[in-house]
Amino acid sequence: MEPEPSSDGPKRVRLEEMREKHSLQDRVEMLGAVPHAQVRSVLISGHIFLNSSLTEAFCIAILEAASCGLLTVSTRVGGVPEVLPDDMIILAEPDPGDMVLAIERAISMLPKVDPQVMHNRMRELYNWHDVAKRTEIVYDRALKCPNQNLLERLSRYLYCGVWAGKLFFLVMIVDFLFWRLLELWQPAEDIEEIPDLTLPHISNKETLQETE
Image (cartoon, rainbow, N blue to C red; front, side):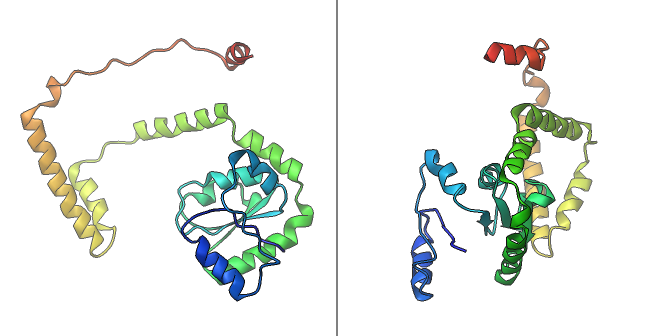
């Protein structure tokens, strides 16, 4: 097992010090910042992609690794659990011990991993037409949700924590009073509405023909 960290971030010095402390110079290669054109070449040289972020919204790097056929091991943070199917990623708590167990499990799974099959699945999961459809579904669901009144919205903030909830509650009240002040200064009915833009329906087949 030969890890290859790739980054020139602020923690690089600490990683190099740790590598020297444990005499891992011949096992751990520090690649530094990798040009985008060379990312694929670096990824396909490995078998497991390790993401140990403490906070993460989506993580494009996980998609790139899976597209190159790598099995992913990642911390269970942010939106990471929703990025890949369960059989393409092993999630662990942001704890060193749990991460080690996840890596050991990934190593045992490697003989069953087919990089080409994984690449084909990624190509089907993430294409622009499918992403656009799923995004539209999310917006449609949001528009169908009933509008909550002020008391309902404020009550939700109270459950954000013993102290944080009260702080958010106070901020929302101040924000509401400020909004009411702006409403008196310039009423909503005086603001010009932008008409909806109606586009002609274009099928996927026609779109593909135009791009060819």
